[in-house]
Length: 286
Image (tube, rainbow, N blue to C red; front, side, top):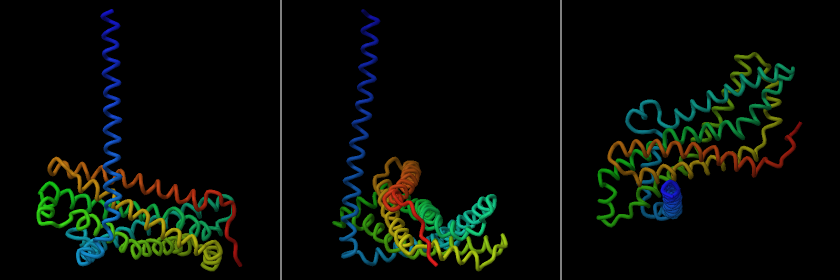
């Protein structure tokens, strides 16, 4: 009986721990949802009451601060990321298509893959690594130094002033940043195919123009805007709720980057399923 009672007690402890873990997870998810919804609605107040702070954050996002400003900020980082990603698509595509004798279709691969997958995902990773991580670190430092509490004492709504302005700035800055990223991926693919690999520029341009759909480009921008909203809200949440001193800010930044990278890939998957999941045709034009 004692052995049975001990086993029953251990089982009950395990069940309680599992129940507490599930309860904590649900509570955390609920707090995140409430914060994210409030942060999205706070962008309206931020646009009305804090336009100067929004413009300052836009400048900070685009050009960076401190050491990051020396290399050109997010503009240079996202440009170089998509530049090399586009070149990789060209090299791999030219080699793979050449194995079956259709390397002339490298222009098709550039127009098709860069717009739908490579440029959005690479830009999303760049957003998370630069803008997002910086946002978490800034808000986390303000939280542990009690600057956010000081704003509340001065009757300044901290969520619209700190979070809403950053989400709004991300929406404003992502369009030119993503335009640069798409152009960099197109340019690098053409240079790698025509200059480095020696394909005829007329052949490349013909297949590139044939398979490039303007609607795909527009949906790609919509995907980038969605990723910018998700990245900024995720990083703002982890920075705003950071605890545990400087080490806690580092932990929050790491968790935010991990979550935002998962979110970027998830957004890409869902949008691809919605837009192209049932598509069984390619755009052919003369």
